[in-house]
Length: 208
Image (tube, rainbow, N blue to C red):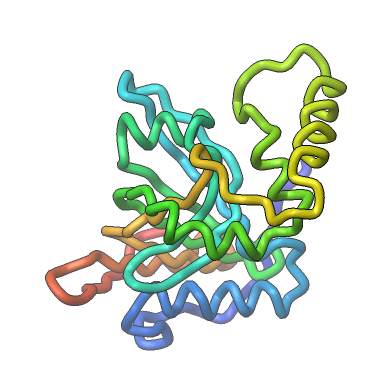
């Protein structure tokens, strides 16, 4: 069986990281973008139903700041329904070219539509229409039905601005812990964990 080999990377110490881990996360996203990662803001979002069934999927993190990270989706999707049942969630970024990951765990809150609308306005028109057309996470008999719905909605709005749907919007994950992981040889990876405190963060090193 082929073995996955990590190549030696520069070590990671607490002193190298910004005291605000969300600022540091933004720096690492910039590094990933500069390294040529296809979509450096892609992260795996894990949620859990009220009954304890976990699920995970990739989302795009569109904002970092004010103590949180933000993503957008259909409120009636599986993740939207699960977040309504259980707001505890986790995000994990992975950048293979840099052999880095960042893990965030915390509580998710839903944005107001007024807060979500500016981002919706920035989306390409096709994505705006797609948000209206998709009954996200629901079964559909065939793709043609979805495409017919897209065409009908495009005709409905014509050349007018596409309004934000009331079933689509944003979420903010406010992390209680953020872990920075740097791959090293021999599986002796560097792991620095930040934990939220009143008014700040504390940091410690974890065993690999």
